[in-house]
Image 1 (cartoon, rainbow, N blue to C red):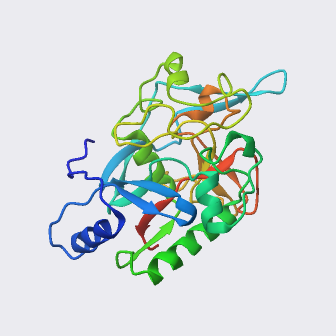
Image 2: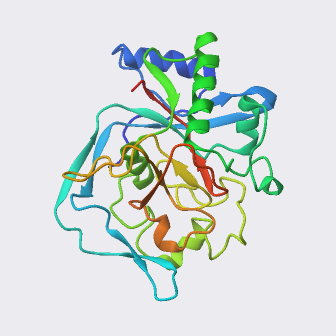
Length: 281
């Protein structure tokens, strides 16, 4: 689905004035924003229009297999099977990149990352879902006090549906750029090219909607429990879903529809997140 909203890069205070007007039905366009953080840090966010996309009713097209030597592999099936439409009824903003070590430290005052040698522009990792939500809470409180949030909106994690809809950017292929694994090196940091570490965000190509690193680098927490959005499927409410794959993932784990789940207090050196600004749940 191609976005039709006019996209403009705006300074922060202007953007939220525009955001408030569109919420009151004044018909103004909204666009990308640059959120100014302490310590000279900035965080770019992309406006994602409402829309819809299709998912397999029986679950992801990617399937996990355990090999004879105890390794996990993922295969991608071209058989889509019965599909169902997922609606994204309201627009939202999504971080152009995963939250970086510098951005995290500007709000939280410390850097928990294992790969600090990768630099302040590498994604923050080694954070739990609970800690990522605490980052969102602190940022929301800061911006509300300053009067810079549209009414009814809050900083949060994207839902699984919001994450996949934005990552796909209107595509139906394994990755947003197609189905060819040979092209993945140009678009993601994963086990074949990461050298076992994270890398500065934004070095690979952006998807058609302006989002970087949606495949690889770090797994991204969502606010959903795994399997949310799939019809007639169980949801494990004790877990939270992660999307996108990471620096140590094989290619199959980085596909647009693949997810894993961890408890919300779990940390890992490949676990990060992408910020959303969305209607309050």
